[in-house]
Image (cartoon, rainbow, N blue to C red; front, side, top):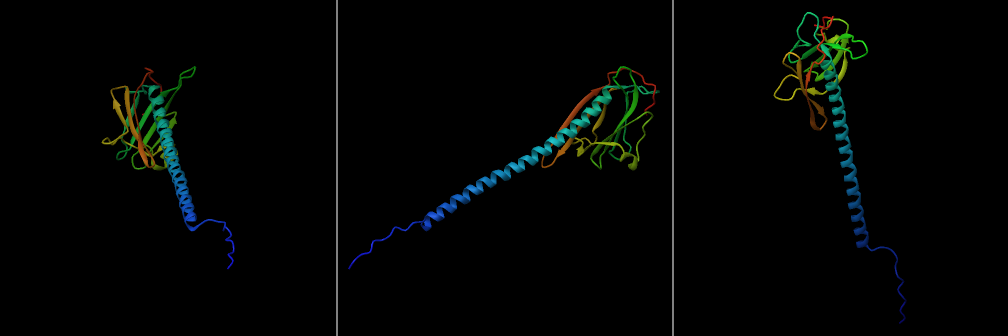
Length: 196
């Protein structure tokens, strides 16, 4: 009897294929997890950055206005803070420009508790509490604003010339971004316009 030589069979065994498939699945799963995690992180970072930017815009606007406010005609304070509806707040100030010649104008910030937004406007005469349609024409500074608990307001008077600003800005799934500032009128001027 003659034996025929056995030819070496090329290829992989079933066990080698299974090990290779498992390693491939493991690597693809790890890479996929990293991609998903980085995408979620990017979304959180983007929402935090947008909330921070919006909150800084509100803070800078109010700080600049109140710091440069003068005493409005026929009053003894540089601003007037009212509650026109529910928890809404209207802050009106006589703002003096810091150019080569001092010019005054009326500025107002409106916090809408129901909409969670802060809006801003200026005028050359007194600014009263706006209607809903008038408020829609004011500049939107931020949407996603709420008071810092347990307070129900974002503006609060601090003495005759000071104002406290305290709010939080929603940042998607991240924790809200908190903004707090104490502002004092520094001009010492009395304006020729009645803003409130």
